[in-house]
Amino acid sequence: MIRRLLARVYWACSRWTLKTEPAPTRPTVLLGVPHTSNWDFVLMLGIAWRLGMHFRWLGKSSLFRGWRGPLMRALGGIPVDRANPASVVGDVVARIGSGEVFGLVVTPEGTRGAGQYWKSGFYRIAREAGLGVTLGYVDRTTMTTGLGPTIDLTGDVHADMETIRAFYADKSGLRPEYRTEPRLREEHAATPI
Image (cartoon, rainbow, N blue to C red):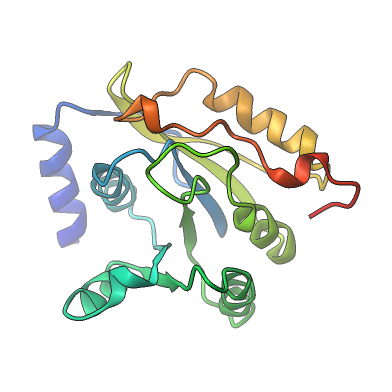
């Protein structure tokens, strides 16, 4: 209740406009794209709290050190050891398998700097856990943010990424120069993710 109240106040005072589809009614992987600024986190909290979503998010393990650890976990954080990112997929699938229901916020760009490829963990988690992928967004050009459609992945990595690319084609993050084109290294591989 307090979170929804804080979110209402935030959106009433913010220069950003919340333009969103309803929150998914099933567990989902929620993409936070483009991820070009730490302010993306504030916008994500505002969206989730306004829509009353129970969510978890993945963050680099250094965010969970010291005094920040309990706070980050209370905000739904799951630490990611970048030296062993594959273990995250198993951890999240195990949480879902145990009955924990949540929207998993993932920033597939992996960092706030421009890169060549997205990280494919979101795709593997969605496929292994049978989850849809909700296309969350920030768009500086229109000063809007929110949730787009939830799609079901087909296993055809290239076709699925074409759908995702089409949605994000006109979206610009807070720092457009740090945007990474929605592309997975595995799109050109012979075997599916």
